[in-house]
Image (tube, rainbow, N blue to C red; front, side, top):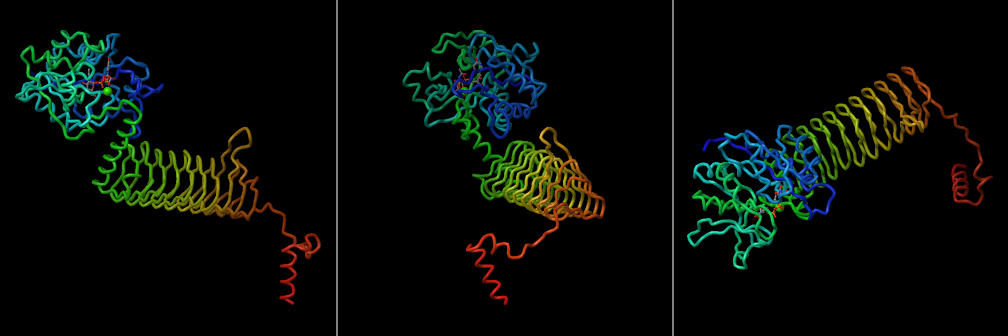
Length: 476
Ligand code: UD1
Ligand code: CA
């Protein structure tokens, strides 16, 4: 035997218990499909080849695998059912001279890690075994294969629950479904295995007894971390695996210098990257390819999807997708930041603001109750409270441009497309329909006129009329 290594990932099963139109291995935890976690772990072993076996929803599953790991070899399983058949067909894709170890993983066992597999492979090779499997002691082993041992503790084989005797069902050491095989021994065993069992399938687990029978060495290594072999068969197990993955991700960030006040309500996808000295407050969801720079404070109750947060920025009680926040930027509370938003250094998107496709320059501020859609705002400008960029004419979207150091008054409507040049002002309540030149003040509201005595005449006997009368007496 050599040190050559190949990985086979089983992903041909139907996943009936998910009750889903989506193939089981494409259901997500940590923000990406189950199968991609297994593919990453496989890649971490640096094998010479990774083979994935598919059949159910073949096109979708293969596309997802190749999208994540383009060099994966896809093998189609034929109509003969069972994990043994799946591996047998995968072996056909290995070079004829491959005489190394074959690691077998399941597409629905997402939390297995690289270190455990490296140790398993190492002992397997050192002990010159034909098969090494990862087992665990389960208080409730129902549904899983049991590891059979003789009085001396030597492994004798594996029996599936459906084929087990009552006595065998009382065994608590279960087969985790993760294995290392010597290629030769495995190929010989699989050639001999039949489908003569309760499920009419070609069981990979039967390889244990076959290899022993042929004089090979077989053993199970028990792990005390049961999550490593936790399979996802239904939606409850999907949620459990997702929660555990999140717990591990949150802990890894804490160990790397990130403050997370409440791990139980902090959800971080596998692909998020966070620098040390970031603070994440309770109820925060960091998703997709979000990156957060040092000194930033996120939350509480904030969702960021595919966002880039600069150093020392503070995003509170807000939701943002595909947005970039510059260093020292401030956002929230209660803002809705949609794709294409870019906020400059020390810029501000305050309370109850919605933005979309909006480039807001350094130190520019949109502090209160505004909608900024399809706009470019220069540096050091201020957008008054309650301002709306009216970007939609009912047929098309239009873009507006605001220069540097512009002061847009409160409750303006900028009827796009329109340009307000550097240093211009607009008065409160302006409806900006025409471009405003540099340094000008734009106003569109008619001058105010006060009609004396209007309330007494038109609203007699009201509280306003009485208050006005009282005020008049006090003044006189
Ligand atoms: C399998 C083991 C069982 C072990 C358990 C651990 C066998 C016969 N049994 O049972 O001893 O305790 O895993 O989780 O191996 N697959 C294929 N092609 C097939 C059938 C399955 O690729 O024809 C794939 C599935 O997509 C899945 C994996 O193999 O990724 C395991 O199959 P599954 O049907 O879930 O096996 P279990 O009943 O869980
Ligand atoms: Ca399973």
